Image 1: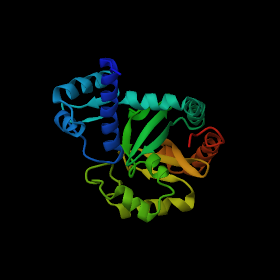
Image 2 (image 1 turned 90 degrees about the horizontal axis):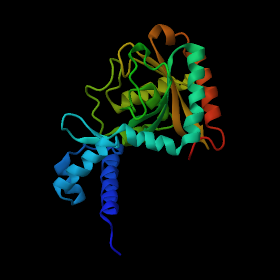
Image 3 (image 1 turned 120 degrees about the horizontal axis):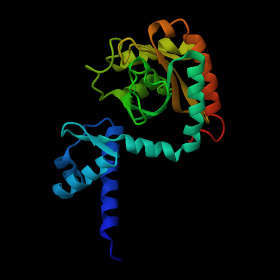
Length: 255
């Protein structure tokens, strides 16, 4: 059976997106056109055209002719596949705004990265820049460390052993796997994560995991200044835990 040019292009485009996605998920070095062509055993000119089309669709992105990474359109599409869960989170995030007047986020983990699925409508305040598909490190964000809540020291080492900690995060960011473990052990007695300037200067984040079937599938977090977070952290965490329990109820969070 003959394969149409459209079907062939679609298959090649999907292979390209999958390669880029897999490398990001594994925390491996990102690739440019020539390297992608070699990995896929395709002509460089063909990869260049496909990659540009995928960038135009927002499925891939590229900064200053550098390597390719997954674009916001890809994560928007992924979120749409879990529409009921993500849609339900919208009301929870806005409840946080009503209660505390602070930014809030729903995030998931993809390897060593945190992927933002949804943020509250007041995200533009305090210099907020988050949008669905934004990627941040898992080890130096409140949302990320909440997603690592169940990881043992051995599992943390396996996940983060190839991470380059240097120059990433804010002034209180961990710079080694043992430091990440120390932060986790510090927070566990409280039952929630407090990330104080771990990713951004002057930004504190309170976060909790969202569980379904006993497994962590996402995290909820609230961000603000030290004055708005430090003393209120237990109260904020209580509200986050209640929302996480609702989102993690049967049939809400996909396994």
